[in-house]
Image (cartoon, rainbow, N blue to C red; front, side, top):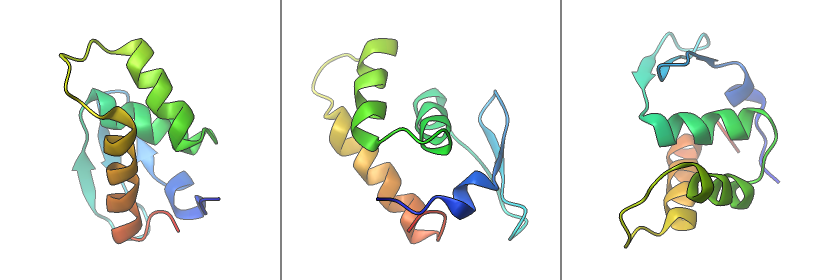
Amino acid sequence: MLDLTRLRDLAVSDSGFVFDPMTGYTFTVNPTGLRVLQGLKSGETPERIAQGLLEEFDFEGGEDVPRDVDEFVDRLREHGLVR
């Protein structure tokens, strides 16, 4: 189970602009990254988020969406936004 306490504090705009009020850092995410952040903030599992991405976006093929979601979560973990 992921600890999303810090992630829930992020301010995330519909355009993918993200602000971390704890550090003052800002960054942007693409539409799929935005969907992952929104899903995590609302309590979805990474597996459900990956399934939703496959349903919502037209991937060219060759993508490993579940692996990509896991890697995105790993990056969030590296930055202390999830545990």
